[in-house]
Amino acid sequence: MRSETLAVPGSTLYYERRGDGPLLLLIPGGGGDAGVFDAAAEVLARHFTVAALDPRGCSRSTLDPGEPAGQRVAVQSDDAYRLLAQLTDEPAFVCGTSNGAIVGLDLLTRHPDRIRALVAHEPPCFAVLPDAATHLAMVEEVYTLFRTEGLAAASARFLAGIGGAMKPAPDVSELPPRTAELWQRLAANAPRMFAHELRQFTAYTPDYAALARVSDRLIPAAGRETRGSLPYRPIAEIAARLGLEVTEFPGAHNGLRTDAVDFARQLIEILTPRTRQDNSFSSSTSRRARPKASGCPG
Image (tube, rainbow, N blue to C red; front, side, top):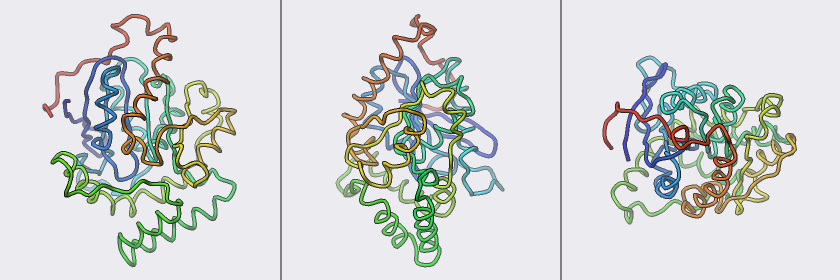
């Protein structure tokens, strides 16, 4: 695994890269970073060049002095686009989970030529739902609790609001050092997510007309264990509007971490045929991500 950085407008992005083959970009959810994909990436790297990033302002991706702390979907989407351009000259596979799936949807609408296929796993864009007002009001309540009572109260309300769709966090004291460091970073990211990202991302509505033009590249995805709960519903709504089916993956909303190996194996099963069917990627040379000499070893 190599850790590298990329300067983008307003930020320096940290990302990790491993494996060989077609490029697969992994985009984490709100408050997450590249480390949440460690277990899945080890499996995926047998088939793909796997890149995973820390979103701007989170963990090891820094904001430039004076850059606003507020997070916007379009800006994170542009960050992902610039990272893809850094890593390959060819369209890439992308898998985003939670807020990362929202970034992926925006990336697909703005830069469809850069994406071979997008797996959008449970984007929490509650604004697409028929009862959006109810769920966006819940988000506002969470934000108010964060501002008035703190992180614990806000977290508890949000977890209740999404219907227990997250598997519990592990006991950090029992984790190996790299994983324990990940959970320390996630804890440090949580306040920024509640203060500057949650409301902005849950209010996002995708460009359906743009998505319809490239719907063959969109794989709507959700966790088998979240069926019927709030995090499952937005991608089901988006899929229905586009005439697509939802592909269910192992685990709950955080299945890419908690059920990483099984999730990764299913991802390989879904994406590998697309590699073989795409005649423009028939040669082994064109299927490989562009190597980069810059960056620091990780």
